[in-house]
Length: 68
Image (cartoon, rainbow, N blue to C red; front, top):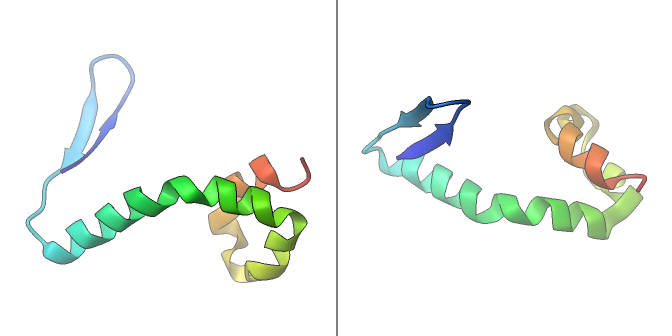
């Protein structure tokens, strides 16, 4: 189950028995915490590593770490 708390007393959740979706969600949750640290270590070099067409996917994380 993947859940998200919303304002006040609302929440959203998804339930699945799909092994593939569970695998993807588990690995995302386990590795996502490393992204800010990796970008901080790479500094400006992260822009050399991340392809132009993928930069929008990293935009929020890049704003936090590139140029600080």
